[in-house]
Amino acid sequence: MNLNINFRKSVYLMLVLALGTLNSCDDSVDTNPLTATDVDASFTITPVEGAMNTYLLTAQTKGVILSKWDTGDGASVGKMNQVISLPDAGTYTITHTAIGAGVATGTASKQIIVEKTDPAKGNLVQGGTFATAADQAKWTNAKLSPSGAAFWSFGANGATIYSPGGWAQEGLYQAIEVVKDREYTVDMTVSCPSGLKETFFEVYAGTSVPKPGVEYKDNLVMGIGTWDGCGLSKFSGRLSGVGCKKNAVTNTVSNVVKFAQSGTIYLLIRSGSNATGNEPITVTKVEFRGK
Image (cartoon, rainbow, N blue to C red; front, side):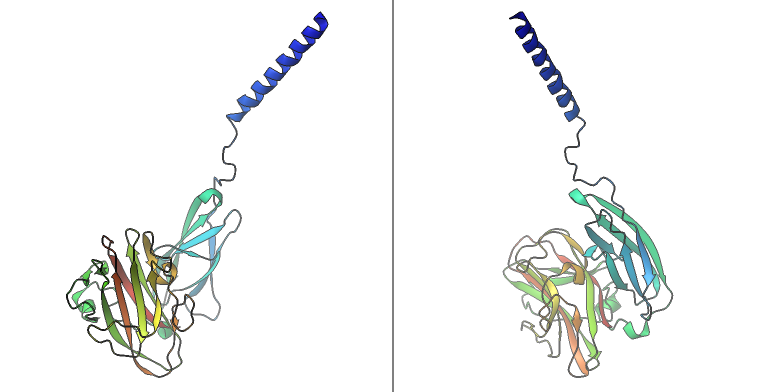
């Protein structure tokens, strides 16, 4: 009888010790073993043969599930093998943000020195930064909001559109000469410090002349629309990266346009909102280039 009692006590003590050992190990266990702790954002830059001022950015892929690239105009989601074009001469800092498991991130930067401007891809937009009075004079107010409820304001950082809601909108445009059947790309840097509600920001390249008080709808190229699922949180970057409105011709998100006839087209930017309390949207570095 005593032997059985002693045996049971021994087994009980062994179980207690075993459980205590397991519990003491719990403190050192990583509570989220799926979170990466060191994401390698390194990448290489390779000139693309036969394409002037065009480069292939290649990120290392181990432990990376998403890449963001910033060529100086704000970061946007891209591919791990990203082709970029830098038509204008200058020094560019390329920053890669690598995102790993558990939303851990790492960043790396490199410089590209572009020696010569690509003559075939020169920017056809004049005053695209809106920084000076001379820049601003290149643009015409579309007068879509006769009351002035929605309006553009110019400054060193670009042109900013203010809309009080109630579908108030306003636009800016300039005439550009194009060549039949040649492909062009449209882009610009856009930013807003907070998410938007019931707001659109649209870019058109149409052949019809804008008219005061008449909503312009000729050949939508690209844009931001809260109904389309973008602009819902703060953004800063190239419109080709942060926008989501579909190109009217291709029915895809694309910033490429071409025209059936040579002549004058109108690059028009318009924006408005139905909601009150939205932060303004700022645009700068507007580009219209031969592809």
